[in-house]
Image (cartoon, rainbow, N blue to C red):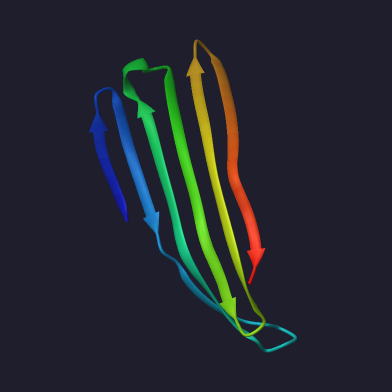
Length: 102
């Protein structure tokens, strides 16, 4: 699902995904299903054009459930992009990353 909103000088795009994927182990024949949630929020500052600033928030939270075991993956990330006076800058920050087996 994609939504667009405006907040003062920001254009905000949000994408929310709920994938369901099924797979079969090549050697074991075990059946697995990927379920979870992925979300993205991208904010563009339109007041700086032709320069720009954008912030992307990224969240992945999903599990792999199956005959051969259960796994859980989680990650948060922030990416900041800016282009001002011909200088392009990118910074990233990853938080709260974990994987565990059940």
